[in-house]
Image (cartoon, rainbow, N blue to C red; front, side):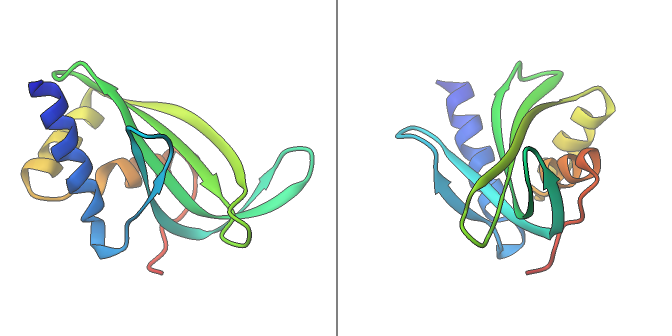
Length: 123
């Protein structure tokens, strides 16, 4: 129960990210949070322009790592363009915890954007 409360508090912190975050219902128990990014080409069998980066915490051992699920969608039609999983561990985990202690929930978005090579937008 303690872990669930911590993850709920973390989700609420992520919602407050720069007053720009919005939620999208993934299922009946969990919401993903997104921020706008500068448009980026996503190539699969075709090419599309992605403008929304969603990040969701999928799990944590509560002392050394956090799992993240990310996906990019198009703002034009909301199509899901690409997705993946990342792990915050080591110094990245420490930076994440320190940012939470400082009252900021932006680190998962910044980390994910850096790994993917996309730029967060101010939209």
